[in-house]
Amino acid sequence: MPGASCRLLLCCACFLLAACNLQPRSPAAPATDSPRQPPSIEIGSPGEGDEFVLGDEILVSVLAADSVGINQVKLFIDDQIVRTVSSESLQGELAMRAILDFVPQRANLGRIALRVFAYRGAVVSPPDEVTVIVRESPAQIVATPAQPDGIPYIPNDGICRALVNVPLNFRAGPGTSYRILSVLPSGALAPIRGRNSQHSWWQLSAEGRDGWVSGDFTTEYGDCSRVPVVAS
Image 1: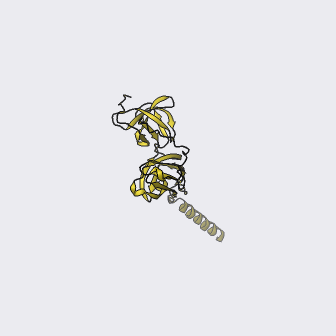
Image 2: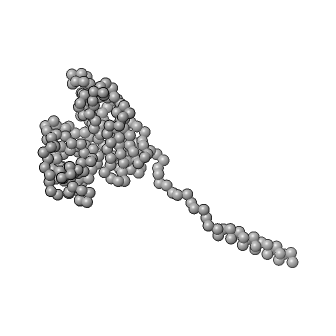
Image 3: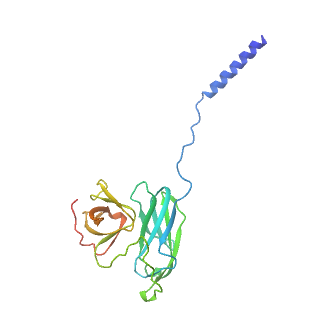
């Protein structure tokens, strides 16, 4: 019966096709959440052509941004790295304001290029850059730059103070296990009242109360040699 034979062949073909579909599938390609765009960074200050005196500190304020998180910002002077600041958060910061400090030496006299990069792990941003001028004496300064936004005036009075380089947890004690009282913004300047015995945490007087910050994310000014050890 030709019709029955055809039906039998068709059934066999369908069975074989179904058997093929039961074979294990090849594993799918691993998913990735890595964004295609690198981080971005912009220098807020100093401005192009600003002048400074040999030995006086230059404070460079930046704003970095990323869709996942900025881990580090680095400052280069004429292609040589001179300062790195890191996020206190292991996940990094989506928007990170930071202040990087640099003291020009005699080798930096004249025009120097300040170049900054933001890092998300090994992924680096395109640089932002300004050129400033380092003079040998104050008498050579043509025009004193105005006090930039986001960077406080730092008195030369010998009082021990901490400048916050990146947004920083202000804690109830000297360690990451202590309660967070608030987050101090980059550029906050506060007197140092005490330290822990390892010189790794500072007790600051800020926002009308005392609290603690990690010294890894601050720059110190004044005479800090007599800051007492404070029990937490």
